[in-house]
Amino acid sequence: AALPGVGAPRSAVAAQATPAVAPPRPRLLMSAPEHFEVSYAINPWMEPDRWRPDDATLRRQARAGWDALRATYESLGAVVETMPPVAGLPDMVFTANAAVVIDRQVLLARFRHPERQGEETHGRALFAQLRARGLVDRLHTMPEGVRFEGNGDVVVDNTRGICWMGYGPRSDLRASTTLQAVARRPVWTLELVDPAFYHLDTCLSLLSGGELLAVKRAFSPAGWAQLQAIAGPQLIEMPEEDALQLAANAVCIGRDLVMGHCSPALRARLEQRGYRARVVPLDAFRRSGGSARCLTLELGT
Ligand code: ARG
Image (cartoon, rainbow, N blue to C red):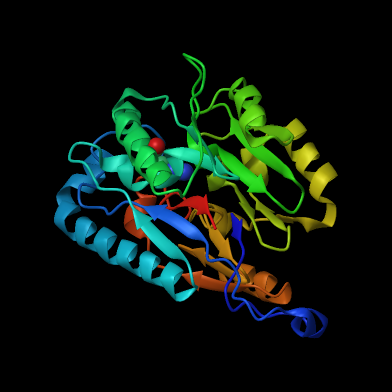
């Protein structure tokens, strides 16, 4: 996820040309972890039996991590909108899955697992409110029976004028037809083949300069070849240690990369390319298979 930044360092040439007006502030959607827990397993990270004994401690950690994530976004100039949490929907905290928003068009999710399908009506209601406030335009839905898990499986690549869509574990390949119509830009589909990296945003992260951080083993050989063909030297392979901490699940705001983990090796590589890693303690959410980007939905600027 790459969003325009506020107060991002600029090159000397660009600095001269900088207008006096402030850059647009990214608007992000989050949902507080009031009811967050791991009470079922729909991905390999989720172990309800290991969550239960430490439930109270983990909930406290989740709350602290979520608050820190929100504060980090706000310190980087983002505006955070919130979606009211609902009892019995522990994964609603992962707002990235509610929809994808591209140029003010909203394409709502249709969840694969019954455990999360209850989130759909709340998502629709929330986006209707955002529409009434003038923050988005139309709401679109997938055809009957087509699964699609929102920004969890989409990387909106403004540097290339395309969208990347992951499919397999959660979203259906045929969702790309509707996505392409709503996004009005080419959609490149990538098959996800490793159950641990079940959403595209667990294994592909777009930086504001167009670099893509990617977990190689998450993609089919054809998918990886396509990433290489299109991104060329801007494709950066994620170190294994970071991949296993869900470090690819990051949100880039200007030159800051907000993430739940960053090894010294990855930090050095990011710094070489002019990015700062902003690590927020999100371990409690990793036990559900999520990190910074899953907890965040980009609404636009
Ligand atoms: N427990 C959630 C699920 O399995 C985690 C979702 C993470 N979201 C994401 N965008 N990767 O559905």
